[in-house]
Length: 116
Length: 111
Image (cartoon, rainbow over all chains, first blue to last red; front, side):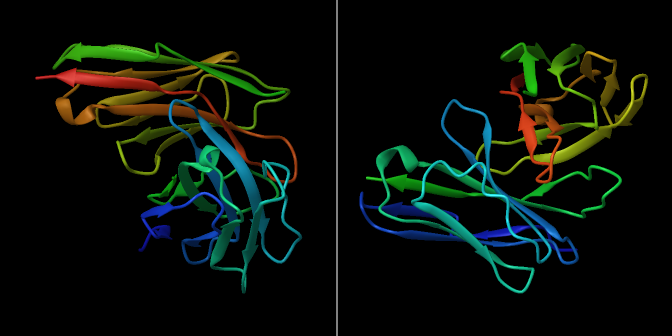
């Protein structure tokens, strides 16, 4: 079946502009995660959605970052007033979510964001 | 706070030269350990999940093992196509269950 898809694959923007990044999770996966991978750094957790529950936003670096998930499926990560330090690869992952276990997360190809 | 440390940072092997990558972790209670492979310009690709000390998983030339303090990814007779960055991660204890990743081992297998 289809994996996690993300769009766009690349985004170049000017400092101060807003950007939207999209993620389509694997069908049937109720959990969705956003991570950020900066050059020379590891993957950094941003936000988590589980079903219709309120998202866990504990990893968002500032209030310029927000995300939503519509209909329990597609998610959009929005970065307002982008800064150069926002340049990174933004990765989306999805997983089955069960209370009794920690399921593997499957990642999309990422969106490479460059802020000029 | 969960911590994951991988070593070495980079490893160059000749084709056929077996070796091991290390992932040591400090967590309040192990709830699984995941290995991923990441090729340049792509997202991490899931390889293995290990849940308890003593557990082993194999896939082609790769074998992952787990102890109470660390995990090893053994690569037997590697080929150039095994070149990638290998990441290990542990799930965070809490509602989000996000993964805490190590910084990875960049493996290069020379023909």
